[in-house]
Length: 285
Image (cartoon, rainbow, N blue to C red; front, side, top):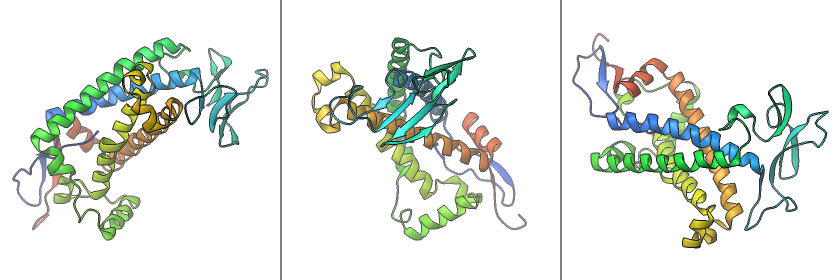
């Protein structure tokens, strides 16, 4: 989801000019990532629905305690959906646990409109998930290769000492809370919060999600048993995979919110055409 900012274009001061912000490779990989991630999320929820409980360790079964469960009451005449975390239960009827499908209450951890396919089918969900997972990885590796070769990662995402200064980070947090976004020359560069978020996703969340996904595969376990030791078992890997994916979804929602709040038309134009409008400050501006 990262953006590439390419060098400034000369323009007259005091005017709004279009500057080249995103390369064709960045735009292409960005939109492919959005597509692949959407399929991975909805097919992943389909897989989760087949066993909507999370455990820690090597094993997990109905008789084993789960620290997270999304379920339904036994009496569907009085539908009751719930989510239980560490023993604390919250009613989620109509959204999680129990939802309506074709006009009837159906016990499902996640509703049909959130899963791929919409009907309950573990095999189909796994096929969609595995196929698009490899596309997601290939697209990510292509972006990383391009980022290294072009200097994009070093030039735009490298985190410097100035970025990590407590005063600088606090100022940016306050500015974002007040919806004050960079303008002029500052809009050409990533701020510290953007760099930390993008680097955190690229260097932490995405590799962790890929490795825990591989750890859940019996074939990969046989070839690389060390993954089970690293993540503490297949069930632990499944739990980490679920929460890592949840954090990635949270990142996407925040990303979309910032795009909308800081100027949806300008941001969308830059990710479609590569051009971004910047107000040049100067005499008479």
